[in-house]
Image (tube, rainbow, N blue to C red; front, side, top):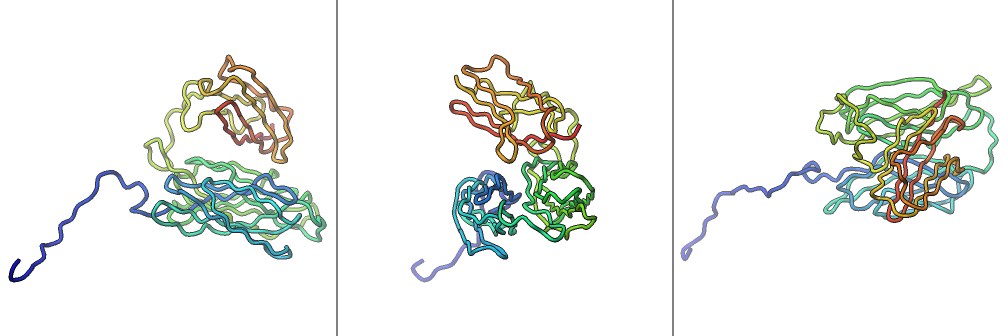
Length: 321
């Protein structure tokens, strides 16, 4: 006023809409995985979040490996990496960014390329621990081991506020589908190899992963009363596969309305060897396509469906009969 001034009290207000990211928190990338491992190249993947807009990927060499350092920013949770040393030891981490802020970096994940000197004088540790797929209640864990390993001791634990969970088992495969996890939970796993000379390796490093959020409206860890019919609906993903894991015959449900006049369907193992291939020169007449797998070696396979304006891939787990 003419003879002075005075402040009002503070008045509070809120904007409309729902805060879905924890009051501005930028969530970290998780479930770091190493796939398509070759002598001098790998593909790095991870689980992002809807809030993330970009990712900074850092890669460095480890012991007994020539100097290597890379820092690259990508906008998708995938990076192909070349120019590595055969049999080299490396590690990578991912730092996610959101529109207004950045998340902290993930933990470092170790990996090893193929090739190089394959001799060894002791039972080597499992390496390249990865989570190939995750849902709100399960995760497909995998690792790489030398031929001298005959079995593996797997340990899984929860951490960081996730309900107490511990699971230990011994198996002969280099993969395991863990179920009965809670949605949006934090877990980690490690593996010990048992070798032909009756010795055991030291434990691998712990590899962290998280399950997806529950988008069905139920609470975490709550069992669904009824399984949906894969032929009657297409939910989170357009291509449906069942059963998975599979023993004898895999059923693939195609989204016919999204396919063009030329479609390729291919399944390959982790070394890139094609085990099934089919071409359609027009839209398939049936949505359900069975694929016999009883003649394939148990393990992890990649199923790819590519058409005009459409592309999707799925991880398929073939188990022992």
